[in-house]
Image 1 (cartoon, rainbow, N blue to C red):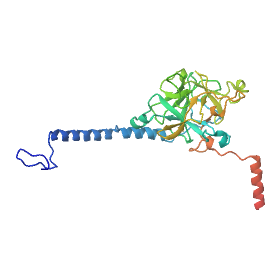
Image 2: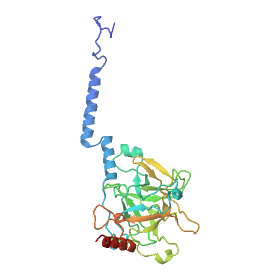
Image 3: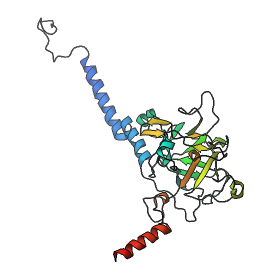
Image 4: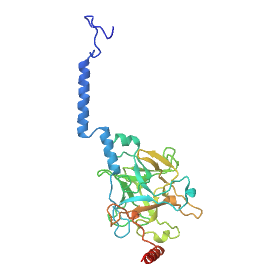
Length: 309
């Protein structure tokens, strides 16, 4: 006999519910009401996750440098420039320009609507200013906003991740048994919500022979410089041969470590360009501006023009 028998001896049909089916129906109704309420308030996990991702990837407007220098309060990108080595010399390191970016862990991306601390950073191939890779130059010693920062002067680097009510600060600390970079095992770089000496950085002139002479001079924008962590005296670096997997894809590890060549000069892994906006174009940066043609190029173009007439 199919189904269960009732008291009358007749079997129940497959559609008949038994036990406390009224309570089950009320439970389903409550779950539906709770779902609709959270959706209306924007409290569903998928809605929170979407807000976080939208803020991290929304377009940002960088600051324009009218005098060619970097100032307190400027919104900039930190770009690790491509070197001039051949692919064989670079192997297995990645080539191309990379920018410093906020990299929350996967749990935060899927379950939170804001950045959580401590938050990771990485180097990404995108050179377009978005919430992830836009940083604000902060004063940590009471300097006025708008003043140029100078070589050897402390400053902070703040990241909002595209949010208007949140800011995290780029920080580092000495390597320990529990605190180190996951791939290289060198000094870790991270974002925190507390300003301290761990969040202080300095810009250093690139040429070590002229470094003392340029101490105290304004830091030029869109020019190669070194960025040094004050507490540990190690340079911000992208080794380029350690990659990590994040929610946004394959990205590259950022650490604090000073790489020196045989002449005791910093290697290109420590080079950074503080990128500002192009004053003649709202969508581009100065770094994207086409370079003026050289004398040889202008002479060749002039000869080709005369040859065609």
